[in-house]
Length: 184
Image (cartoon, rainbow, N blue to C red; front, side, top):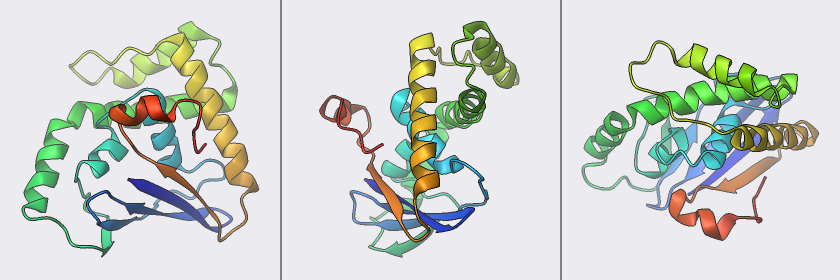
């Protein structure tokens, strides 16, 4: 699956997804970021932590969220049922992705990823309402995620309006082929 994050204004963007099944989706962007867009932060967190069924993994597996628009291609038979099943099965990883993107983006902005007890405390604090144990994150993973977030934010801020960043979502199976050759 290819994902293009296009800067449409100084603080606006749109996301176009070209799934492997031939369906192209427009993902509306409710945030108006001064820095890195939320959807890119999700991509980086999910990629670095290998969250197979975070937001982008669910989209790759056939999920279509209510706010998405199919812009081309034809959805396969039983696509709505498949979408619901993917989302139902991914509830915990979707929450993990959302919360980790929020926390780790804040940690990256503060440049506090080396303060491991603080990172763990923040992750535990946002996870507290859930009954299931949270997916563990190592100090090395947090440092790697925060570095990727800051580096990509710099690239995004330097990007002229009308241009975009395109990445591939390959999931866990594609991880070995991607090492060392990341789009961002």
